[in-house]
Length: 407
Image 1: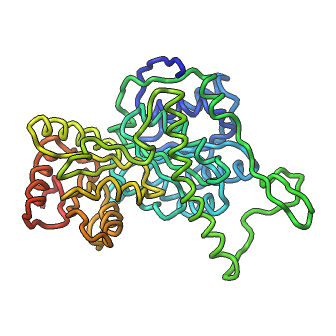
Image 2: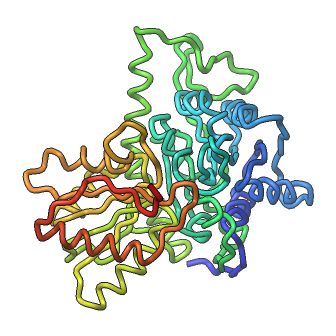
Image 3: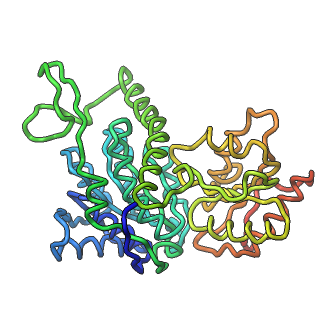
């Protein structure tokens, strides 16, 4: 295990520090609260000559991801960051990045979408991109943000994956919270991530294998038209890559544990007290810490409660979740995103679908919380756990609940 230095960093600074260490060739971004600190810090590293990175200033988030797509297609390791409306402005390009199999890493500092204007956290921005072909991680604190950015480059650039990765951190709760972060030495991270290795493909008209990048010399094309005769097959390649990503995520999680001494469950989910729990609360992001704290306090009082953090939302860890939650009586699904006109939040829908075919699946209740940055208080979590314990005993309650809203 490598040595480390403890630094006081907020979540945005932790992301920037990880990018600094990862041999990134090109960064292009546009500032937006609460993400701005990330690209400010990276621009300082570039200006100070601390990194050999090309920093491209642009006029919008749409242009930022366009630059990243071009640079990645040319074989560069690239990074960008955004939030909320910035991610929305990138929308069409999200699908292009994944469809072209470009291993871009992007930090998204979660922020509610307008209107009305709000600069605080919910997951509506990134959840909306769940079907765009990006791997999605949700981190709990600055330490996990630092670690996950480093892992993201290894995962994205694995030749069995080659998909863009989105690392999501809750706006202000994580992005602006100052905490001790254990950072590895620059040379350790640099050696671990190495440099991007571009995949080779056989080109029949050239009669040989070439690197699948736009190098200005080899006559190949990316992003050509594919109508009904081939489009479906291209999209299936993305689905297959997502399936491959699960094992790569687990492998990288194990490798990083050897390097740093830190791991996050199996890389896909982490759990506390689930093994013998009657009820479990599931969450993504910073709320997982609050829920784990409350679960620990309730277990000291003899209540069989557990907490599960979904670290990886895409690819969705179907087998792992079924195995972990099969014997639980009641599960609360915490959604920090709204679905207007749907039956519950996005995460709730995923879990209900996952357990639908099981003969004896757990009762599931959806708790929608924290919209627009509203606090989730420990007392709220205590009440939720007690309600779930009643559900486990047979009590009937509404399946979809909105926590902390004034109506």
